[in-house]
Image (cartoon, rainbow, N blue to C red; front, side, top):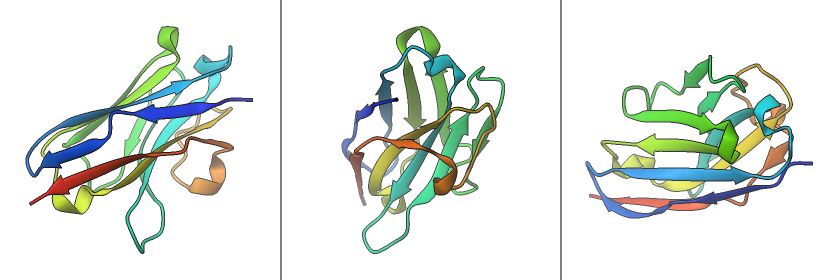
Length: 124
């Protein structure tokens, strides 16, 4: 079992930055692929970024490439999402997800464990 707790969300002006964190429980965190997803009001949850357990592979949605960076610290059981040049359309609840795999999945059904999410609001 893995429990995930996100933090770092908040209100920021367009062009600003935020760093989200996702703290995971469990001794085998280093063997889980970690992903970030987001869901805006009235929209389906969408993929944002993912990172393999070794951090050797990453994947990003086209809408965030060049602006967001996913990273992980296996010693701290934590995955991060650095978000720069934020836009109002980035406003959403951001959730982290985990799966016992080394493949950088991009679909929600491929992840077994989910956090509760943290709200990110970008004002124009």
